[in-house]
Image 1: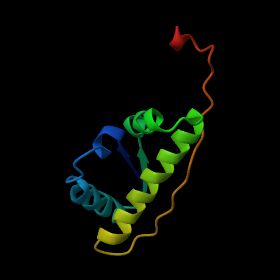
Image 2: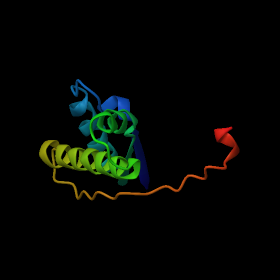
Image 3: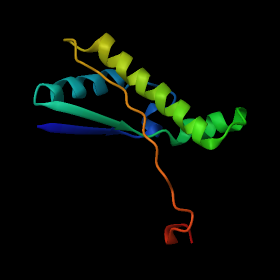
Length: 102
């Protein structure tokens, strides 16, 4: 069974006291099957874009990688048993002509 856990970018801002609960949830789900974790990075992209004047796709990839590695490290360091963890960056092509932007 594949268990999908989605973490919003806002949940990863500021006080990270919820990390232990997150790791506990991931661990519990891993006992039931494979786990796929997705995460947002909107607030982190905005904060980094305000101080680094790079291409938005680079800033998005940088924050995506940073968050992915942070989650992987939390899992490696705080799980009751060692779980195999991998981090995968993705890219999305947005159609500027999409009517959703009207």
